[in-house]
Length: 432
Image 1 (cartoon, one colour):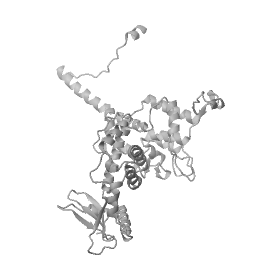
Image 2 (cartoon, helix red, strand yellow):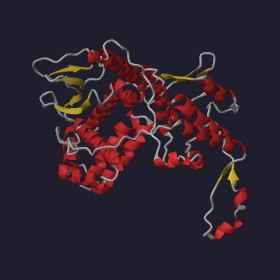
Image 3 (cartoon, helix red, strand yellow):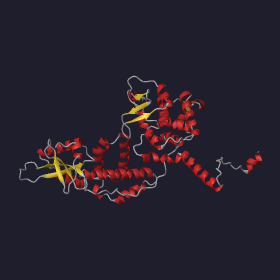
Image 4 (cartoon, one colour):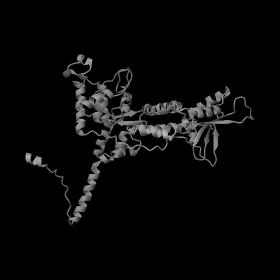
């Protein structure tokens, strides 16, 4: 059969391993193991060998890690090398014995991180991989031990979230390398490393904080936000007087910040949104791509007004236009630093605007499934972090139960729910 994703998915394991070969590329096939694992393979006879010469087989990678088109191209390149006198199986054995951690990282980046991951995810992967490269890049990959990884993980203990994510990336890199034949199967020194406890990272803005955020945005759009000058530097004498140290914010930057808190969208979803994806009549932005794939971004009346007030720039398809022709704004670091400082929100991250959107929905008892759909969560467990904010159903439940129990204890009288009185301090009583 011609090996495609559909045809390979239809193959089932048997009691013994077997191989299905491709009808179009001789030597290209897929091995199906009794465990259910499927791996792409390439078979050939060494250059110059006749029919009596034993075939050699090279495993190209697992079906789950290597798309059919990429596996087919790899096999075609390998067979072409054989015709020119190469011996991929021998070269692979030599490479397995000599590949360093740094080289393993390079292969993983070129063949998996770059082609398979979204840009934002790729960046975080590369940051983690560089930590490993700096520490052990020159070491043979087969010589890297769990002790090496545990020690490196310990060095990052002051950053528990980053440390745990780094270990997950390193483990993925070694698992991929084993599937690609760069290291022996089952060798993964980053597997089963005990993770650090992570503190909750969710930060929800209160109504008062949201009011201060709105004030700072309006101030930044009109008279500008104050900026600070280090008076100890020689250049400080050339700076404007303190009363005139203000800078206006770019209207597209303030619009992006408003859309983030009004929609609960992720940063890149707003920055990369295009006008052609906006459907004002239905109150939607159809995102062609996001962390969880295609999804609609629902627009409230307030969000629609933000879009209506934004001018479109000819030649730039993006809603949040950047400084370069045809490009979106790259980030919001500087405007957010100015706005959060003016609003007294130091330490609040841009992503916390998304958490705040969800917290207001949970507090209004809209239901976690609805909130999850608005946020574009693919797993209900992701939305469950906001369950503790949904106090109304629990309050109604405890009031109902308490009223029934109190009524029974009072021989049929129903209990009235009254608000608790706050005890006054002695100082307050004296003042009154």
